[in-house]
Image (cartoon, rainbow, N blue to C red; front, side, top):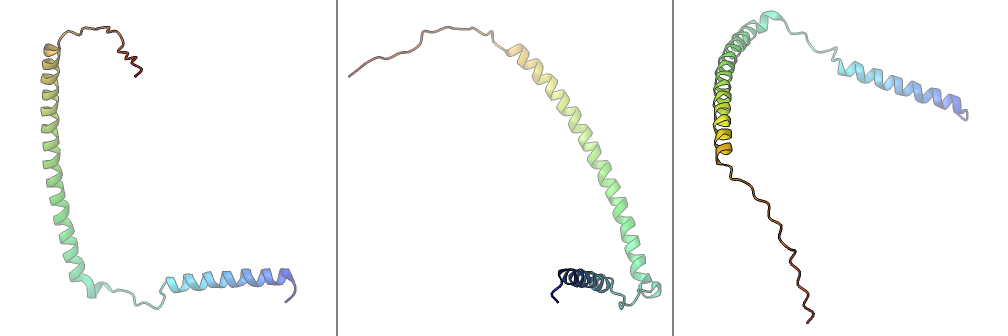
Length: 107
């Protein structure tokens, strides 16, 4: 094969065939299909467990939301009291201009 075009077509064809084979193997067409009758008890148990977990997560979410609301109220109350205390306790500020400290010893 001395033709560059023929080499290019062979390369492209090989790559296309490779990816088609890869897709065919990844699809697992030979794997048996799961039937509903053999997995019905397991599926029912999983559905019941999922329902339990969803109810429990809703309960936990309500508890957490209530605690966060209480925390936010306490935080707001603390901020207002802290702000009132800092305003009352702030001393007057005095600006002082001092001469610069310069040491010019040469020994």
